[in-house]
Image 1 (cartoon, helix red, strand yellow):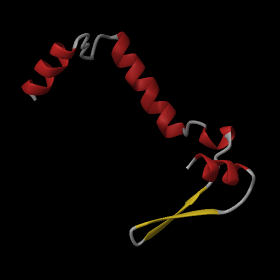
Image 2: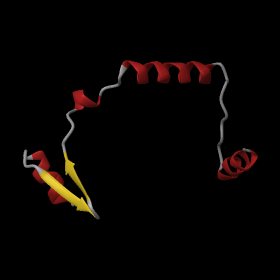
Image 3: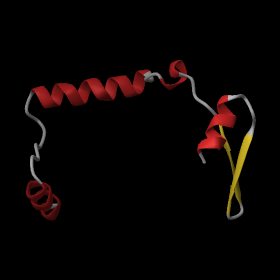
Image 4: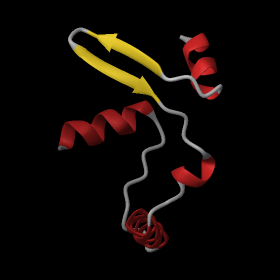
Length: 71
């Protein structure tokens, strides 16, 4: 699989078949993976809620289990 990524990085078109579906590997440049304005807004909102204490903090596996069981 690593060689497939190397070939895609070199500009070669790489196709992978899984069952009846065909996929292509396309390298993504850093500038193409930048945050969209909508995603940046969601992240800013989440950070604000965290600062205001509007979040749940789970520090241990037991905390996670208890929280998930309570849902």
